[in-house]
Image (cartoon, rainbow, N blue to C red):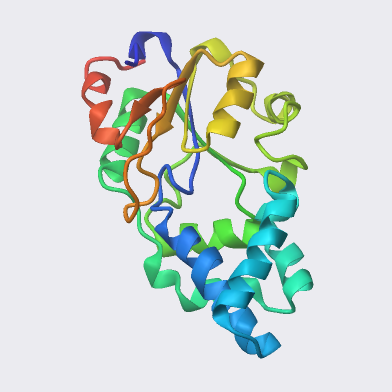
Length: 223
């Protein structure tokens, strides 16, 4: 699945890849609608339906991932609401062992996320991920989401990398397609980003359920 001898850099997504996507799914699909319903003095189902349409309008754009955008749009302090349910922020199984193995192998380890800076800071603070990476890049600092074809060229100006020797792991198929179009050779899709949801069927990328499936080859492949 992964020829470690041909890889010297890893790009890893955060939400759904390293962290359980259940936090984000619960937050946006249930908690925010509940809070919005209270604010607007309406029913939960009505609020869920209204927000689902508004989410759809900006899906795949920076606005979708931007906490400040949603605070302005909804009249709620989204960053504060995330803190209220931050006990749901959980690192996927085997992630910490995998990250440690990558560091021991001598490969460069980079976090590349669409998460807003406030969400990124909260999650790094609430988990053991802070300090694990050689570099962390947020799409909001770059000015484009990872789905955008120009994202990768902008990232490369900040983080020079060879797409033929970089392994990129993400749970978003749209993001993986964007990376493939840019020339990434090594791509993996996480098929169980949300521990509360069934495994997804993915046919156009190599897949993993969790990082235990690719950690074994690292020990004998140090740079």
